[in-house]
Length: 251
Image (cartoon, rainbow, N blue to C red; front, side, top):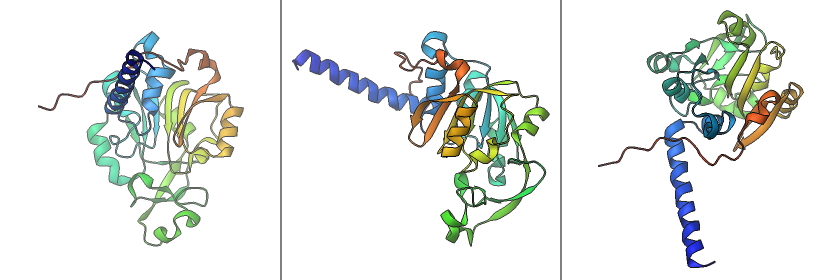
């Protein structure tokens, strides 16, 4: 490699490192889910920033830290539903978010009660053999955990109640192993998600989503991003341009 090409390669590497830092600063997500949504799924390079979209955030935790919908709501005028059943997070949600907050627990049936762990922050959730907060996974912790009873609801019930649009731009789904429970009775014939990001989907959920015409377009560590087949041709898989804020200079 001659000196000129080596210098060019070093500059590209420096730019990539800087861009990666700026992307994290901009979107505030944990693994790049929102950055991929904006720059790839909605093709910022061709269309600019996607404004006035609609999201489902399940679950939003405090609504701020490593959150997948705050940037959309704050800067792009998106609206949506924020699902969070841990009362320790309610004050932050009410203070920092404007979208509708639903405190009931999303389940595969409405009108029941489930045990819900709330002492372990973003790792909390339904206590069940099917979830992360199970005897098998966290048995010793559960002996001393703070667990409350929470009423259940379903996505279908809440979508009808809140007049959710039939085509939803984005759903962030991260509920500590209860993702398949939340979706297995969902009426995919009535509602369509343009894009879904899910943390650690199970084999059953992957096969279930494929059956309902959602295709995997990106793996981000333990998260997978899916796009409905109707929108696959609109995804920019390798954009040359990406949107990012520039951090303020530290004087």
